[in-house]
Length: 593
Image (cartoon, rainbow, N blue to C red; front, top):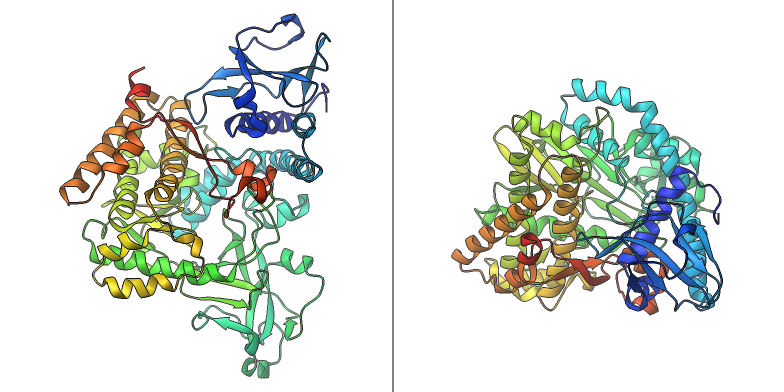
């Protein structure tokens, strides 16, 4: 693109990429770069508003880059303020005005190895995809927003409300990952047919797989189609099981392995949820089915297939969390877990697996909203959380925020400090349940949590049984040796993604003073830690980690998910690769400035 005109979507994606590269110190930009207040050459070349500072970078090759900056105290010390920068080809040469993520990524990778340059090249394609799909999603919102307004005014059914929130959330970009708009593997047609932004409905394909080849964790649910429903011989019931298959996954399969038959008819009408691969059954509102989708989101390495071990480990945490809620009076009123006991898989093949998620009746008399929807903008320009505050808190957004934060802190601090459990309950997986009698959490999809075995075993009623159960976890990355891994997950998911991102959105809409909201968050954390102390639970580590440090951990997801090889990042899990460079918005130093 050079200095050529970019579309608004391309400019938006480019600035997000540059900003994330600074945040994650990619190619040691912040480490080796120098922040300067003025350009050493003629500043008249810069056609935009003069920035607060510039980052001078001269270690990437022969070029010297000047990146416009502004100070920040949220997630990074310095942030990018433009999709453009200045470049000097060699010392003494004149400055050139540059912009565009292609030039940016090619410049960053120019001095890297061939393997590393290929990762950057692949990421350029992801950025192209994000730009194209960002534009399509903006257009979809404009086309559908009048209907969304009418829908919001009339919907009363719990499942309708849940799907509405997911659709609304799909129009809001990820707070931190720069190209989250990209559903790599989807073209424009697939986006319209299968993405939540368009709220499409379609039917599932079905495979009949030889029973000797598959494993089912329980009986299939009552909603399952019969063999006749999908056009197969009813006699096949004795020898085969039916597996659901996403139409886009079917289209990408070169051929079917022996023992697998494609049913001639589709069956069961579904609508995509925010995760895209989890599908809500229209005629069976309490049932969602998670199916493999040959699509990558949040990085090229995050292909949305289903690893069979997650079926078992997810159910392990469902059972464990349900037991904790039943036996711990402090947790009992605060959360329920969706039923995830049923799933199936064909050996270790990630493209032939599924998980059924059942919402029990106890959840169906509440208003369920994914955290991802809270900061989404409604057609009237207000945040969705403001409408929730109208419905349940007489329009008091600060009262809403207090109860929301308190709920998350009570649940997740107790799970961490008493039971040694940290959940990857990101904005998509964390669901808030509203009812006139109070607020609670609905939990789901906890197959990638972290567990400190000795603390969990020490805290439950039967430590010996707990030890046996811990041994049954398949993905051993779940098990950690100390508090740091738990603290990292609590900080980057619950604190930064589920709370701080909401505070920033509220501040951006003038719904509260930013510093005051963070002060209140600090006070709520201190109050919850004090309550845990009174229960005899050691909070010293968490108190220092959360409140005493100048910087907190931050996920380096662009680095681990797309731009660094596994050998270079050393990350066993691309979703758990951290830096320690996020300014601590809970520190007294920050709050007193």
